[in-house]
Amino acid sequence: MLENQTTVKYFIIKGISDDPKLQFPIFLLVLLMYLLTLSGNLTILIACRHPLLHTPMYFFLGNLSVLDFSCSTIALHRILINFITRDKTVPFFQCMIQMYLFGSLGVTELLILTVMSYDRYVAICKPLHYHRIMNNRMCTMLASLSWLLGLCQVLPHTGIIMSYTCYSSIEINHFFCDIVPLMKISCNDTTVLELLFLIEGLLPMILMPFVLTFVPYIFIINAILKISTSTGRRKAFYTCSSHLIVVIVLYTTVASQYLTPNLSSTLDSKKLLSLFNAAAVPMLNPFIYSLKNKDVKRALKMTLSKCSFALN
Image (cartoon, rainbow, N blue to C red; front, side, top):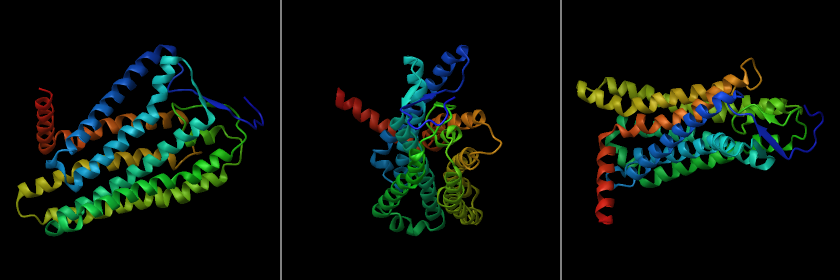
């Protein structure tokens, strides 16, 4: 333990487990999940380049794929590097950058999911005006605004953490630099940051996107129930169910991780939630959203056949 530490040049990443016997299985599991995440989301991006998928829904899915493999890379690369190099140290500023990028991209993902909810609302409740409302300009503006707000939202939290000069330990009980475990080892007064979590976190980061995501589904469900044919209702529900499942899972894990920073939940339980959020959700998203979709499969086959023809 370090008392009254005024200068921290590096932190030590504890990782998921201290048990030497578990290090290799954890490495293999994380590597497999990361490779599946990377391949799945890159496949979606390749498919979305095809003219068949030049629609607002797949434009936002492309943004979501970029966010998914970026967040996964930021969070999981320390586990892989630590196992290969046996070096668990991370420089202070590199730690701050990692914390900022993961947080800001996470907020951006919530906002993109909110925009996707609005897109589904327009598609189902206002189908005749869909292409007029969700034109290229509107889609670009909504996506750009989501990225801008996400990148700005976490700046105050990062600034406060960077101003801390006292840490009771340099060991971070996590598998990457995240804001909650950093708060746990700081011996500075974290009251301001905790209030910022609850006030700014509940309203702009969690509650507002949550409300803006789920309120359209009240109108969507109402519109689906009014569809006369069972085939039409099933098709309309199918276009929304994947998005709704991912949103519920993501909001549940995010709220459990970040809205109770210093309450009874342990960092070990938060590590498991964080691993699920950083590894499992980005890995499953391509399969839940698009890889089972006939249009995606068709576009992917046409793209790959065109590439093979060009190579021959």
